[in-house]
Image 1 (cartoon, helix red, strand yellow):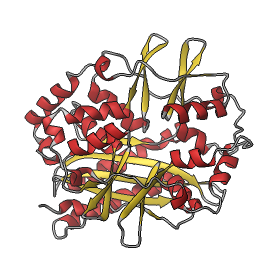
Image 2 (spheres, helix red, strand yellow):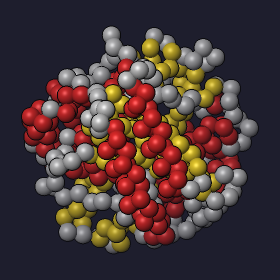
Image 3 (tube, helix red, strand yellow):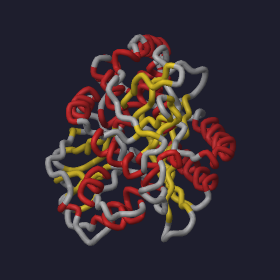
Image 4 (cartoon, helix red, strand yellow):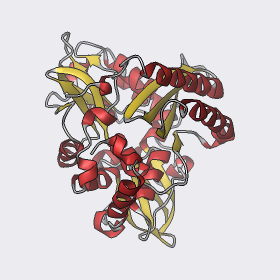
Length: 391
């Protein structure tokens, strides 16, 4: 079975029943970290470093008030590390024990988080980790047989071993990456570097703000000085079950994809979550926009209208299966936010991936949607992505 088979409503219904037949109790973590509203940001970062959580429940006494997220902290460059956690509480979705697994996967995709709290009233009774959620793909035949090339992202950004850490961090912030492959001059994967390595190697007690932490990481040191050189890779024609095996057993969120020794793409936990989420029962095409801040939600209707218009046009050529879009932002030379928007359209058994960067959110999204529409038109005559290759 491949991604294209998810178009078959009967197969999709059976797959959804298998996934949603799994209980939250069976995959939740009952042992999880928390922080208090009165803890410092520095305390929260220490908890994240020790627990490997990037989204941690925040409590006021014993009551749940929200989550503090690694990504949100990094975006607040001027905040002091002595500031209270309550100033950075994020309102992520919450889970109940009777919730469907496909719905939880959809919530993780839309909020772009790694952990979600399970509540009983106002008390946190557990946490759903992204790593545990994707593990179910190893036991479901229809999911585990999907090939890596069908859902991987390509082309993929990478850095060289002798690149400066400054360049790698800038790329992570601009593209909203947490992990980047390290390659040699022959484009062979020789390591991997992530935010965890940056924090572990550059944390200094004298740092006063997030900006100070970033500056310490952006010193004139090379990627090879902190990169993990024992990085694992996966072949482009391997199945998803093999990818999940490596991710779960090693607690990796990202795997470089290779053909022989050459880097040709990347597959992440997020990609597998999208598969699980796409099985959720819907009356229409699955469309998901993630990464928007609260003050940007007013733009959603405009973006959805552009997506709807694009889908209407491409439906005359191929039947769309799902469309996901992720918005990230970064400061360009300390000025206003610049938007980096990536999107993925599953259509005709193929994943089309594109990216656009610009200052205006709605225009950048519209330009990206137009670009993807053009790619669909060109699909009839051109094999423009690696995913079109078959064994």
